Length: 279
Image 1 (cartoon, helix red, strand yellow):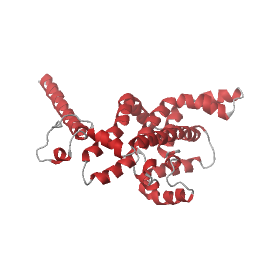
Image 2 (spheres, helix red, strand yellow):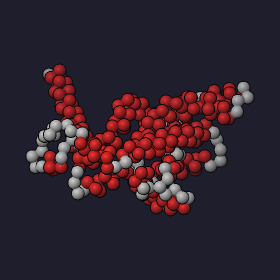
Image 3 (spheres, helix red, strand yellow):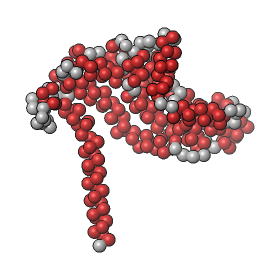
Image 4 (cartoon, helix red, strand yellow):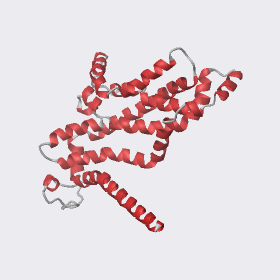
């Protein structure tokens, strides 16, 4: 009887997992297959699973012929890589300082960092836009990089990791050996924090690549748009037809993040778990 219950439980669990996988993967499968279909195939009342005319790359050819998609890919790569590198550096330095140094106002400043995580992103858009416009940041890629170089989540995550992973005794021993604070940070702190930094880098890379709202606000030149922002312009045009081209662009913009997740999903999960630890 007990064995039968275990078998039934496993079957039920497998069924639920299968349903969840189908529901989760269906939009992506529809997107990929739709990029090879004409509009009448996408919106027909009796849709076919596979393209009726075969897997023709015409929608991808139209995408690259009519839109600066290659340039948008380069823009996204530049913004994402530079912002992620800066975010990892500054967030790790700030997290290390909050974790291992005692200074006036430390707790107050850390509470402000946590409070900024609870503030809706949209509430900061207007003042941020006005600031960057006054600084000449309209249609400049650096205006997409600077706002995210010290992310509050990264400071919190790396601070939590540094608390338990960087021994204070090791730092004191380095000071006895006449090591400077910069040496302690770059030769002791950051190497010990590297697993969490690597996990945060992956998370930040994905977030920056998928960012949509800020790029369409600060950039209005087509050649300066990132991939996600360009998709919005393609979507506006596709309202009058050629939805397959929009799906083709969406598919191409998704593939880098999909491969990144498949390669580093364990590190991402471990990083989130490490960043949620308590002092």
